[in-house]
Each structure stands twice: as C-alpha cells, then as structure tokens.
Amino acid sequence: MAKQETNRTKPKKQVNSETDFGKMPPHSVDLEETVLGQLMLEDDVVVSIIDTILPQSFYVRKHQLIYEAIFKLGKDQAPVNIQTVVEQLKKNDTLEEVGGAFFIAQLTQKISSAAHIDHHAKLIAEKFIQRELIRVASEIQEKAFDATLDVSELIDFSESEVFKVGEGNVKKAAAPISQLMDKAFDLIHKAQENENSYSGEPTGFTDLDKITSGWQSNNMIVLAARPAMGKTALVLSMLRNMAVDYNLPVAMFSLEMNSVQLVNRLIVSETAITHDKLKNGKLSESDWTNIYEKTQKLSNAPIYLDDTPALSVFEFRAKCRRLVDKYGVRCVFIDYLQLMTTQSASSREQEVSLISRQIKAVAMELEIPVIALSQLNRSVETRTGNKRPQLSDLRESGAIEQDADLVLFIHRPEYYGITVDEEGNSTVGLAEVIIAKNRHGATSTVNLEFIPEQTKFTDRNFFNQLEDLPDENSDFEYKTQVFKSKMNANDNVFENMDPNSSFKPDKPDF
Image 1 (spheres, helix red, strand yellow):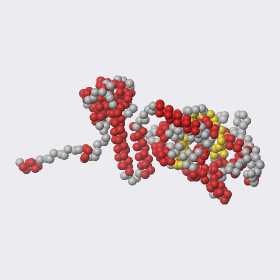
Image 2 (cartoon, helix red, strand yellow):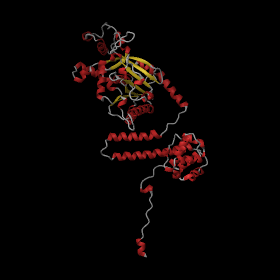
Image 3 (cartoon, one colour):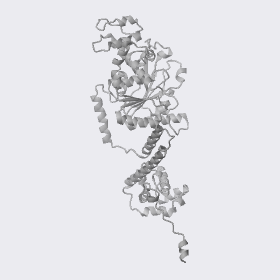
C-alpha cells in the first residue's frame, strides 16, 4: 500500500501567469465591465466616449466584441440598450461567444449610473496604450538582436512604430474659444511688433511676403514647376534669406542633390563666381578672398541640410521633431515630394496622397511651415499660349492640392522662348511666382528676377537700386558683377570702375 502511494502521480503545480511567465499586461476586467454596463444603462453616453476608445482598446476578447456591437450602434445613431446590443451581437454572430444574453444583462446589474464614464474610458485607453508600447518595445528588442538589420533601419522602425501608437490613440481635445482667442491675439501682436508686419516667417522676397505675410505656422506650402524652372534655386534663395538676413533656423531635406552640391550653389549665389570655376577649381587669389569674405555670414547661418536618399515619411517626421527640439527650426523645405517613400500604398497615386497628408500632419503637429517642392505633369509643355501652369497640372495626385494651404507655381516665359509679354514688356530674366491657391488669403502673381549665372532669385526691383551711388558699406563689387551679367556689358568698364566715382550706370530695361 505504501509502495502504491510512492508511485502515485503527484498533482501538477498550478501555473501563476504573473510569476511563471512574467508580468500581466496592464488591464482591468472590472473597469471594462463597468464601462460596458454604463453604456447600456444610459443610451446617450456612447457619444461621449466613442472617440476615446475603440474595440481593440479592451483587453478581454468578449468585451471587445460587445463594444464592437455598441460602437456600431453608436455610429448608426441607433439606441444602445440590452436589447439592441443583443440583437447586434446576433447579427455579428458573436452572441454565444460573449456568454449569451444572460452575460449582457449581468453587466448592467453591477452599476447604478453612468457617472464618471469619461474618466473610466480614459483609463481603459491609457491601459491599451501601455499594452501597445509593451508590444512595440518587444518587437524593437527582437529586431535589435538581429545582426543583419541596419541600425538606421532599426531606429526608423522604432520611431515610426512608437509614433503610430501615439498618433492612433492619443486624441487631441477640443480647446475652448477663450484659449484660441488668446493665441490669435498673440499672433496679431507679433505681427504688429514686426517692423515688416509679417505674422509668419519672411522669405526675403518683398512682394511675396506682402501677400502671404510670410510662411505661416501649421501650413503646408507646395511649390511646383516643370524641370529646369528653378524650384531648387528658389528654395535655396528663400532658405538663404531667412537664415542670413533674418537669422531664422531653417532645414532642408534634399532627395535629389547631396548637401555639398547645395552648399556649392549657395556659394555661387553669394559670390557670383560661376559654377564652372568652382567645379574646375580654377580660382584666383582674389576669388578665394571673395569666397572667404562673402560666405562668412552664410557659414554662421542656422541652416541644416539633410540629403538622406529615399526618405520615408515616418523618418521625415522623426527628423523634423528632432530639428525643432534641438535647433529650434522654424521652417522646413523638402526637395521634392514625389521622391519620398511610404508603406501600405496600393498605387502610386495613393502613395503620393499618403505622403501629402503626412507632410501636412507634420506642419500641424510641430506648428511650423513646411514647403514641399513638387513636379508638374507634361501637359504644361503641350499647352498652347503662354504655358502658365494651373492646379490641374499637379503631378500624380489631387490630394496635394487638397492638403496644401498654398500652392505656388514658377513660370519663366523666357524658358519657352517668350521674350516679350502681351504688353510689349521684356520678359528676359522674369520669373512669375503664381499663387494659384491660398487658403488664408488672395491669389496673385509675384514677379521675381532669375539670375541663371548664379541660379538664384531676387526681387524684380533689385536692379533699380543700382542707379543710386553705393556708399562705403554697400556691396558694390557684388552689384556690379550681377549688373554686368544681366547687361552683357564689356568687362573692362566695370573692372576699372571706381566705387567713389560719380558714374551712374543706366538702369537696365526689364
């Protein structure tokens, strides 16, 4: 008998999931049942939490199914009570899975009112976010052990996944108008104190800033043109003006040119030394002196360049967030939108639409203007007449026009061989910046001057200033070099010119 006792199978040790397999994910069964009961007890409370929690916010599977039925009734504006929920569960073929009508009825017996349901729903949402962060952290940890995965890919994955948790689950509450009025008054006071009366970030182009009051925070601005119209050149001119003249921290993401090429363009723009000279390295001692003197301010300007190829929208968002936090960046440029990438897109048009929405979301989240360059389709080239672009020419997606607060086009008549306009005025060097859409103001056309030798843009009235004698502090050498390139004048006339002489060059006829 004793022998039989020794051979008897010992009872298995009861499993404790918390101690044997780690901690339980954050959740509260009682809290979930309380919220479900409150929703069925008072019909009208569902609208107060329908934007706070989703079916997947619940931890228990049958609670998810019940809330899914309630969620559907709420969206359809149908009554929410025991009977309607039971019927909806029958339609979903999940009534038996949740425990039948008896379990549904029991949920309402545990509570007496729907008081504090908003707070209860918020707690459920917070626990769901905690569980999602644990899940993401586990995935990041698993990938971190993968030696074949590139570290930059791991960082991109980590940032994008954590961002998805926050973006999908942390809802922005509506603000009372009193707070919004204070913010609006602050912007008005800021514009009043600004000597140029710009409420936004000035671009350095006088007429453009007058119309837009500078680039506004939260705005997505699209600058579109056909190839060779000068999109990159115009953006670099803006970037230079904002950083050098106004000391505004700005950033540019270049997906088409590397950062050194962009810097070379800026050097040419500042010094009027040709690209060929820089490329060949055939620089005289005076050229080097010119470069060192003219680029001093540029070197100290708060400009940040990023030439990451195939930049994803999630990577872009993470980088922008760091630039704003670390350097206080006030404006971001993208060259150009169609070269960015995203996932989960079934077509190219859908991909561009997703990219466009994400760019707008970055502008809203970080409260900065984001200027995205964009291509135009070929219909501009085949169009008869003046070939000015229009909104329908935006390439690959109508979502760009929809998401953008401003849409601007660059049009240079001279590029198409049009040297005189309808009124007989010269269009040589003319660059029209067409404001085709302005969500917060008027549409118009701004005339700028394009200087091809320096691949830069200036105000159209820039050369009017040359009729005045330069004082000892003005950049006479620079002005005469630009003036010479526009007038195609004899080099000796300008090289031998004395800055203190009484000679005044004739104003060019543009």
